Length: 293
Ligand code: PXL
Image 1 (cartoon, rainbow, N blue to C red):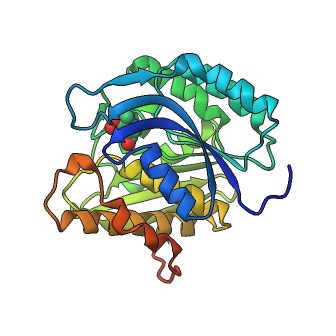
Image 2 (cartoon, rainbow, N blue to C red):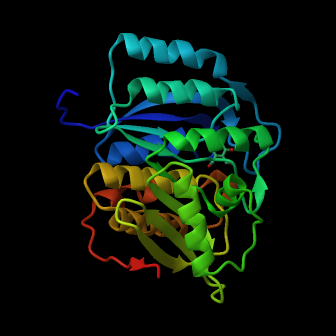
């Protein structure tokens, strides 16, 4: 791979015109973190699906193969392939081949955010076929970043909020046995602490489990999962280790939610990203990660 002064990320997500999610947050976050984003739009929507009725949805499955064929002809390569919301289960075999064709295993970080649902339910465009296909796609990942709902669907286990540390460690470990070396679960419940939510992670490379706890704010903003994983991707590509990347992701999302929660406007529009993007370039001073034992 040629030596580049700016690292390059192929970002395979939808483009939603209104509401801050997917490419509308992936691009500004990664660009602010000094990375070049090469977009692969999986679908184009008028809005994301979280809280808007009657959105238009253009599935780009039929264009993907041609898109990737052109990139192959150009001999492009990437420091990272990062996938998120997919437009159809049929896209998964095409994206899987794209990963095979473009990964030179040592140099390309493959991050799969298995976007499927939240709060115990699948999103409106997702079905069981997508869950099953996603289980095959994550075999190709170095890292996956499901939320607690998506982890339950991938493992085919009940979504239950009284999960303890030992059981969540088992979930992390079992997900890593499905392929990825690193697994991060967001929005993991903190048993006995209703005002807290956890991000937990496992790294098979050193067999360590991590936890970052944060104050639970009782508001849901679509797109925060996309923003979180984007900060993790940016942080790892900048050379941070996994627990520092977790800390940076949590601190950024907390700042974004706090900037939004203190104002009244519709949650479905997403967090006020524009007010906090600059935080990504500030020195990182306070770290709070713990080993999960
Ligand atoms: O944030 C995940 C996401 C991405 N893309 C679209 C979505 C959602 C969640 O609702 O609807 C189109």
